[in-house]
Image (cartoon, rainbow, N blue to C red; front, side):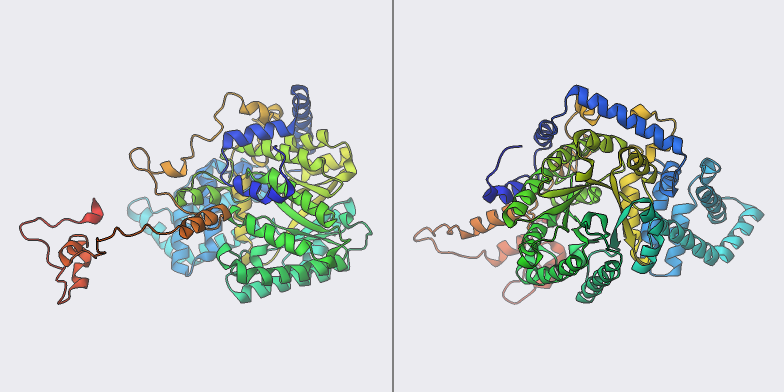
Length: 590
């Protein structure tokens, strides 16, 4: 990566918001600096890890579920849609329609007995029976009886499906309250794991929401303080905080009013975490909020009250081309403020949202990589950078991918200088194999909250890991060889286009012959600066002797769509009457 003076690091980050993907990947390959021999050794080690995981027989519900109902099946997509939508349905009738739409048309019997998980097989039988009851096909007496059962059974079916979704979701939440989560996590703590607790809740919509989330974080820190009894913060539990949960107007347009309040709320949590000798990580969110989050992070971390505390953490998403530059900025910030910080490196959790937003807005590119292999390469390159920054940064590598874990182990000679992280309910067999073999630390990211706060989190996890190309999906599919799962992402770049040809560029989403309108992203500081510069330019002078006149009433009439002309009838401008001897024409349809 090119060297940049500290004062210009934020400008460099901003300049790579919609970076050219091919150029960005070339830079990342150079940054990773892995020889052909290094890459072959990493893939071989990763294949051994895959075989160790499969040989352990320790598959958990998420792996079993995704193996049977991944995004490569219509049934899997239906279940994920159902899970995401169920709690947002306003009434019983709509819920019945939703269940019928998502369950009845699918062939659940094809999945019966295919999984080794009792839970998955039981769910399959329930969906088979429900689907048959809801299926309206058939004639005569059979159709009549089936319709009768359907009408009598809909309330029961509604309750059963809701219960099934609730049970599935609760497999991925450590507890409904922080006390319950701490109690349930004790067995893993006894084995040598630590936890980072995430108090579930999406962006605050109201001030009441923000205050409630802030209190939940503060209460969790107070509860965890009793269990933070190690001198080394890295061995104590931690907490993860979403900035969007702390203020209802966490947006660029409200920066002047929002920032002081956000800083004060985050600072109060950071001080409480400091007193509890634990870590506090700022979770990453949508790409358009990155620049704003760096303002909050810098202001809070600069507070002298936090000097000497090594628990302030930041999450960086490797699926964005800005990631390596954000790491440079964080390192320079830690040096300038004389701090040690934690950085959790993740691949990213909002990919589909980022792609769709860029297309809808007609941006000049995407804020994320369009190919999974590019993100894998980015993660390894960013890991290489972090491993060289351990004098100021404690890296936390969050991954469920055996190849990524093997690459980190190959690049990091000091096993005590970093930790791995995994999600509660996922990746346990892989990380247990690595921990036993290498003696590395592992922290479990554990969601805490009631069912109504769960589904948005659950669906993100399913979307991240449900594709048939994901490691979590492939690890339990014995038809896929260990070598295939552990393949080298750098080799996958060769001879392939840098961008995903299946994803339309924002300007081309309508196909040939129609160019999408260009949008202006008013969350982007560079776009805002360009708009301000354009506004500051003086208007062209009026030509002397030429009066400024508005168009006459007849000219105005020709430009007003026919549907709305009756609304502008007046004695001074009878614009509702179309010109005589001319066929009415709607200019809006031209």
